[in-house]
Image 1: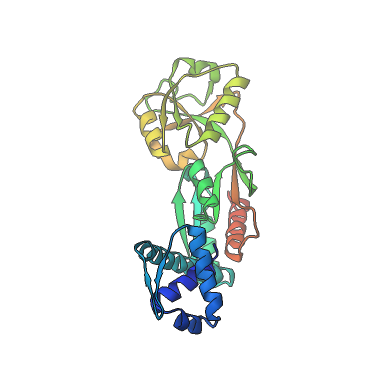
Image 2: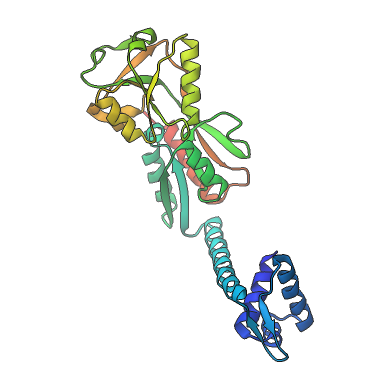
Length: 298
């Protein structure tokens, strides 16, 4: 089934006459009739009731007409929006991001991009890694800034490393280690571990597995949370400790204490990820702004 089949069907349904629809579409009547027959054959049911001088929609045809109009309208909007962005005009740019790892660079990136492309509205989507990858696959996002997952997860995408963040331990302000500048991994064994959800943040759990395997220590995961906000609240309440990037300090403020670990975990890699095709001018410019934000970061 092709879009022309939908356009032909809509024209015939609206005109209720094949001859008038053919004239409107600038195609021959036999060719138009054949295309509608081919569409019905592919669907496996009749869309039109035919008489000598007119055609009328079947019940299935009325439903298919509404759906066909919606599809054609959505395609028209998609082409218009994409053409506008590609030619440097207005439009929207949908960007997925992980809040905590990008807190240092995202505001500066946005300021620079909006100064250069004031006609493009950037819509930010705070999502988990899985949600961002799904959004890229479905075309709901044009680019995402996320913790770089393993190669298997980004198959079919292109990505570029932007920065590396040191990892530390987050604890409540009244925790016994709150005044310490460094804590040994073995010292945390008696404290429950608060983590992000495995289903939504598989890359985070891979990082935990590598870190604890290297330290020959295993902390029991007491709780899993679907957002950084709820994870912070649990740690602040004294329910346990959490392994977080150092950029968490900008988000948590005085609510949590961030303490260095020994041995130090591998840094967290933050990357830009986009579909495996040529970048639009707007996305390329947004990526350039992100690169510049990292270079100028204090």
